[in-house]
Image 1 (spheres, rainbow, N blue to C red):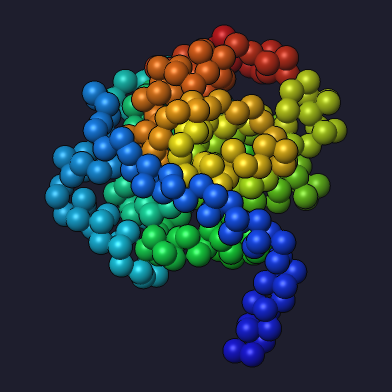
Image 2 (image 1 turned 180 degrees about the vertical axis):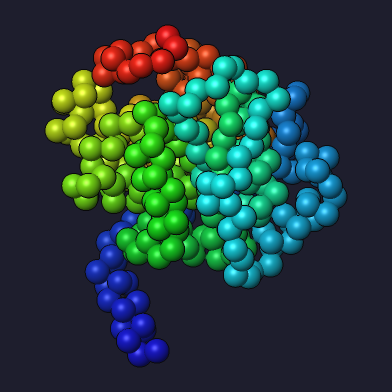
Length: 314
């Protein structure tokens, strides 16, 4: 017990500048906290996280609310094993694998709802990597520990092994992360680039961060120069009045690689309700985003290093 206490105290001392920075950031944008769930009204066709009819049963909706409000230690319902299938899909693309890492406060039914909506919009099977919720307060503490104190804990370890296996087997791996999931993704990239055995695999990775809370994300200069594009390839989507994006990606552009697409006056942090419909319409990017080019089963134009890959649709 004493050893753990000393470790925590050392973490606090070593990261006191980061703690001060994040406290000031959180306070400076506090007026937008209520906008995390605003606007409350759903867009047409949106399966909102806040509507119980979006879930298979009322019990799933009630469970999601219960786990959000009541702290507890829960197990992940899927480490890439649960696959959300679209109703309509293009021809099978065995060369590509899609993954989704959920955000804060996501019980199993919420994470499945998010992954299912991604599968519907992009018409691809989406493998869910579920970070279980320990209750909203517990999730916030885990995010602060991982981001501010640089102590990953158990957030990224299971997902890392799943991603490495996919990168070894497939020519392209697409990872969509939301909210707290962007912190997990940033750790995954850092670990992949750190080890010589996995570093070459990163050129296959495309990373799309939505409502990002992470304060840093790296690309590899040498791999990027050799590939002719950033490695990994990264895009960010943010609402300018999303409180968590404000203290995340929008306040850390100097330490975060990738292209940012932002709607300055848009609020809300929920993936389905506040982000995915706008991404699907191209509201954030006017058609320039690579992620947008995947909508409705389409394939983006080939990058220079992909032109030699077999069986690739243009």
